[in-house]
Image: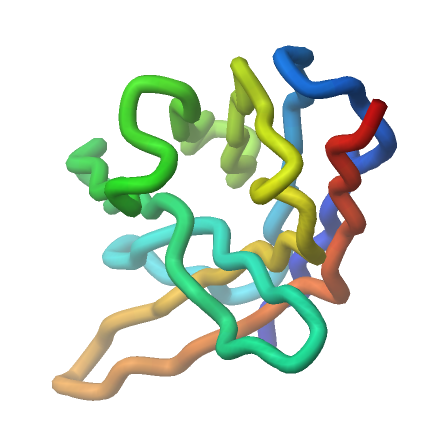
Length: 119
């Protein structure tokens, strides 16, 4: 199995920055994507950003130009640098890993970390 441990959430003022980290352990495989989703109470979980094991990235339109995702494959860790934060970025952020192998996709989730943007 795979374990995902997130860190870096907290309270920040509008316009501020935060950096989230997610360390993966276990059988993550050589072909996978890692990413971040977020969820407000009463709303669906939505994609924020993801990055493949090859380094390709994808971002939600709402965060393009403000957020940057990266990964350190040697440490099996994915990072989300969040700049110019807005109150609407407030949510619980979940780390995600999709493992691909033999035609099967297996999805794993972290426990979530709260990000609050407020003055």
